Image 1 (tube, rainbow, N blue to C red):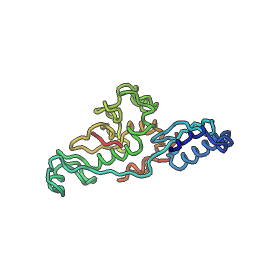
Image 2: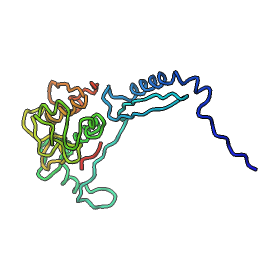
Image 3: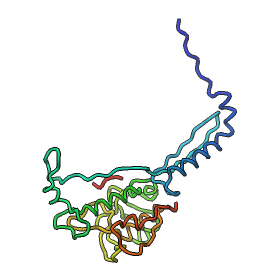
Image 4: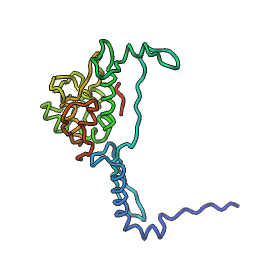
Length: 233
């Protein structure tokens, strides 16, 4: 007759002995993890919970950002060729040269790339964005102060700025549509606006002025030492 396994005790004597030290050990592990994987003190994602040892419960709050990622662009919607994409059709759809005005009827690759790179910072995707979102409303102080309201300033999806909202361009001072609107503009190049940056500031990023324009606008403008992706549809 097979002997049935006995149920394990709720915890071992060793666990019971370590129980009183468990909260301190968990706090130390939490601190080490946040230092290793965090982005300053403003997380892109947050993981909270509790774990027990020896009958003693310890809470944890892990704040982290991704350490790597990837981004790609689809070919022209009109290119149905199998395998290798058609350069002619793609070139007719995309504007590839960031140093020249966007061609009529084309989508600017620079503008779309800038948009998606900002999403990587948690714009519309991270917990440091979600902390301020309620439907289409935004409660972050910087963007609210700039707009005069936080109500109805987000797109229906909750992770883009409302289409049509305009702001002052950071580099040229001209009134323009935001980079982080919900839809790319045909035949137009987007540039960062004060409103784009106000949302980033609310998320905890420190915005540093730049001495002169640069082709690496995003890298020159954002100091990723923080105070506190979802693809465009």
